[in-house]
Length: 95
Image (tube, rainbow, N blue to C red; front, side, top):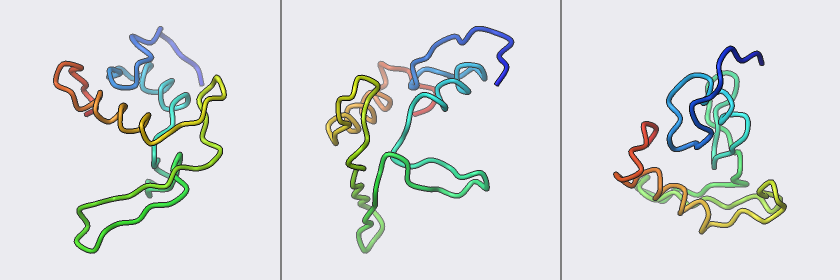
C-alpha cells in the first residue's frame, strides 16, 4: 500500500481520513469484518449466537486473539472499545 500523506491519527475511534482508515483497517481487528465480496465474516470472534428475536448477539472470542504485546483480548476489552467509541465525549465519526 502506498501512502501519499501522513495519517491524521491511528486511533480507530477517531480516524476519518482515508490514510488513517487504511492503516487502522490493517492494524486493528474487530469482532467481525467484511470479506472481499462485502459479506460479514468472523474476525476476533470464533462464533456468534443471536437470540430468537434478533436483539442480543453473543460473541465468543477466539482463544488466540491477542494484543501486540501478547496479552489476550477479553470481553472487557471489547466492551471498553465499544463504549469508548459510543461515548459522545470521544466524538467518534465511526460510532
